[in-house]
Structures are given as structure tokens and as C-alpha cells.
Amino acid sequence: MIWRHIISLRVQLILLVVAALVAAQMVSLFLFADERSLAIRAALGFEAAGRAANVARLIEEAPADLHGSIVRAANSPLVRFDLSDDPSVEHTDHSDGGLVEDRIRTLLDDSYSRDIRVEVHQVEGELMPLPNLSREMTDMHMAMMRGELTAVEMNLSIAMRGGQWLNVGTRFERPPIQWPLYSMLTFTISAGLLLVAVIWFVMTRLTGPLRRLARAADSLGRGENGAALPVAGPTEVRDLTRAFNRMQDRLTRFVGDRTRMLAALGHDLRSPLTAMRVQAEMVDDTETRDSLVASVEEMQGMVDATLTFARGLTGTETPETVDLHDFLESLRAATSGGFAIDAGSRIEVRLRPNAMRRALRNVIENANRYGGGATVGWHRRDDTLVLTVEDKGPGIPEEKLEKVFDPFYRIEESRSLETGGHGLGLSIARTIVQAHGGDITLGNRETGGLSAAVSIPLAPEAPDERRKR
Image 1: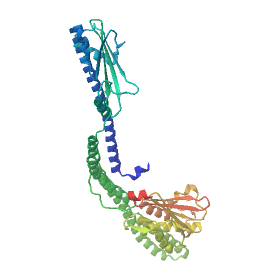
Image 2: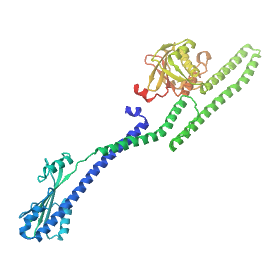
Image 3: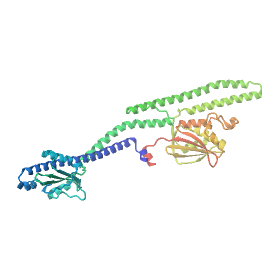
Image 4: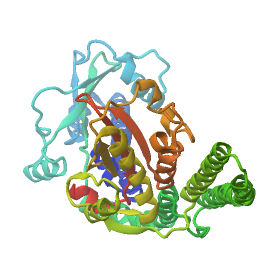
């Protein structure tokens, strides 16, 4: 998704933690409401069972003429009693009524000889408050339940000694899920302010060193050798920073050692080559002398090209931010044969001007020499600048498109310096571009000719700039 590339790691983690907290609160609320409902049902069920057992015991112990008064006195808005010849419950519901039946038998000291029937069922359809509630209690009840009444009804039938049945009816209303304003305010303060503030502080300590590490890695990829990063942050980030510093130091020393070795080799070869040139000039035979001098000059040219290749590996030149169009205009003025510019949008790029000028000149001069002229254009692809150098020549066989970047490799088989050079031009160009963190690739155009694509990474943009694009 696009938002993952726009929102920073810190904001993503904060949103994730807050979302997880909200989900946990919702699950907790659901479980709490369900457990509260079950607890209320159990409490009311045991209360109704206790009242029914006490009323049954009182009826059996009182004279018959007081039975009606006892039933009327026992009635309440929540529990209804009735003494009749027939039970209101036909069959016992053992799944939900077993505990209620056991409690009644315990209170009556009855060991499974008396017929006690319990029925529990969900009330379906439109539900109104209990009919024997007063108007004030009905209004208060509806307000508390927020107009959403769902209930479980329990009916009891207890066999009495005289052959009659004590029928008991009650209803347990399930309380709705409520979000009091105080609870919502407390949750908002704890999650939205305190939690976010703590996470923001912790993530700043984590993402700060990571951002510095990302910028340093990008600079190293463009050939800019910066100072060692300060070791800060959590243990894992500190270990990562130390590993990066060690890697940067090793790469810098490796490239520097190889460059110094090549430079020393080229310097040491100049003395014997100069001596050979002097000795060749002293040869009397003209043809032999000219052949020896040509060979020495070719070797001298190869040494100079090797030193140029070595200089392309170094990053000693200070990088600069240049306007690409102006940079190419100055390069065209200094390039033998010139080239056409297919201007794209104005863009600034950070590079080492002298090194990049040498790299592009090698590619352009190859196009002028073998392709009858060069056209340079550019475009932006994500965070990469792509320079294209196109010609109208015969192109290169597919199997040699990558081979031509090998040092001292020449497609021209005559080995003549006038037609083939030393075979280091494209090697030097690729080395310089790769030192900028980019690369050069070659491809044959469908309309004829060769196209060289020079990709150079651009400096990372801030999140606001990426959103604008």
C-alpha cells in the first residue's frame, strides 16, 4: 500500500499499538458484559430459587386458610407466585435448571422425592417491562436498559404435600453494553495522550539513529565516505551502527589500498619504460627503432590509462549538487565532436563533477566514434536519475553488451590504438558511476543504434516531498 511508504515507522507503530489497545478494550468489554450477564442471571436465579423454597416451606407449615395470603404477600415486581392444582411447567429443563432445582431441594431438605420442575427459555419478540411494575419504576427501568430489553424467563413448578403446585415465574433482563462518559474520557486520556506520548518518546530514540544510518548508507552508496556514526539508541541499533561503521571503514581501506597499489604500479613502470624509450632511440635501424618506440609508447599509454582507471576508484573529490542541464552544456562544450541534448525536466543531482564528466565523456566519445554521433537525454525513475546516450551506429552483438565493460577488452580486433583505444574507456566510466551508487547498461535500439543508460541515485526526499509527487 502507498501509505506504508509515506507514514514513518514511528507513526506506524503508534497507530498499531493504539489499534491493538482499542481491539483489546472491545474484547474485554464484550467478555465483561457476557460475564456480568451470566453473573446476574445466576444471582437472580438463586434468589428466585431461595424465595420459592421459603414460600413453599411456609405454605406447607401454615394453615390452609393462610395459603392465599402468603402467596399474595410473596409476590413482587420481579417474582410472581401462584398456588394451583396444575403445574405451569410440563417438563424440567436440566441444561439450565439443574442448579436451581438442586438449590431448592437443598433448602427444602428434600432428597429427590418431591417433583420440582424448572424451565428456562429466551424471551423472543417485542419485550415490555414486567406488567406489575409501577409507572415510575417502568420509566426508570427503560432508561437504565436504554430501551433495549432482552431477557431470559424462568418458571418453577414445585409439588406441595396437599397435591397442589406452587408455580413461580421470574425474568432476568440482560443489561446492555454501556459506555459511560467518564470511562470513555479515561480511556481517551490513557490511550490517546499518555500512551502515545510514551511511545513517541521511545520511538524517537529508536528511529533517530536509524534515520542517520539510512542517510549514511545512502551517502556511502554514492561514494561519499563520511565520518563514523555516533553509537546511540537501543542495544540492537547500537550493534547495527557499530557494524555499519566497521563496514564503511573496511570498504574505504579496501578501495584505498587497491587504488594506491595501482598508482604505485603505474608509477614504478614509468621509470623502466622511459629507459626503454631512450635505448630504443639509440637503435640504428630505422624500422626496428620505430617499432620499438611504438611498442614503448603503447605500453606508456596503457600505464596512463591504468592510472586513470585507478583515479576513477577514489572518492577524494568533494561531491557537489549541480543542475543537470547546465552540467551537460558545459560537458558538450569540452567534448570532441559534441553531442545533441534531448532536454528533460530541470533536475538537480549530487555528484563528483570531474569524475562524472570523465565517465560521460568516455561514453559519448564512443558513440561519436562508432555510432556517428550521440544524443543525450534524461528522465527520472522513482528516486533514480537515468541518463541515456544514444547513437545511430550498427550496435553491438547481444553476447558482448556486458563484455565491453571488462578492462582492456576491445570489440575492434585490429588492436590499433587509433581505432580501438586501450579498452579501458567503458571500464573507467562504469567504475566512476558505480562509485556514485549507480550503474551503466547497454542495449541495442529497435530502430538501430546503441543506447547506454546511466543510472544515478538521487538524494533521498523528505516524506512531504514524496507525498507531493
